[in-house]
Image (cartoon, rainbow, N blue to C red; front, side, top):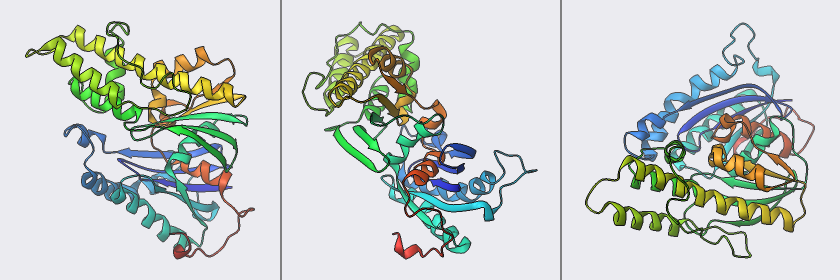
Length: 334
């Protein structure tokens, strides 16, 4: 069962072909991040225009098995087309959705709409599949959620961010420290040379009995510290590194504490990480240290937005099965 997945929710344009939900035959990603780095963040109109430029070349390349034109995948081998339908930037999403509708109609394939956040969870199925039940920590630029996964299609939302997501906190702190964009990798790099205990930053909601998060207060605490430490002067390199390390440690402490507490409460066998912030090295190491059960963490290239996770999610969640060659009517899905 081969599924063509399309992902255009933000600033990555991606197409992938995945077999049986677990085997990646191709996964092509084109990113416009360099353009957004010049403006310190994503401009939606710019992202959508870049999606439009890249979508067809990326799809064409996905049929070449990661560039090997000698053994291309044929359209006849594709059993369905899956596409991210949200959440995301509306202009970017439209590029992927309209392209997927056109392909499904022209090729007479089933069209499978996929939730972007749910797709991130399936990065963990693209290697050795995890066991159920599991608690998933989904952390990205716009979302921080804890989810109890009882099975495919059986998800229970346990809690999430009340304001800023973890990734947003990284981005805004990086801007305060003049470390550039994207903030997560910049903070992580600076933190390698810093002391995580240098500044006593708060751990918002770490002791509350629920599974919700809040990072806006942490961001404000960093802002106040920057003003207090530097005054009218610029931060020194050492001060910047210490602040980066302290911020990263505070965010990771909260994420891990809540995740482990949820895993213990629901007596699950494993914990999953998903989303762009799951690429953070300290988070990956700390969750393994503090949870004694099975910990599943996707490869870094599958943590960020890509179409392989979309295709995998479609395989495990699409009904009816088996895959039928039906004439796709785009109006039925959107």
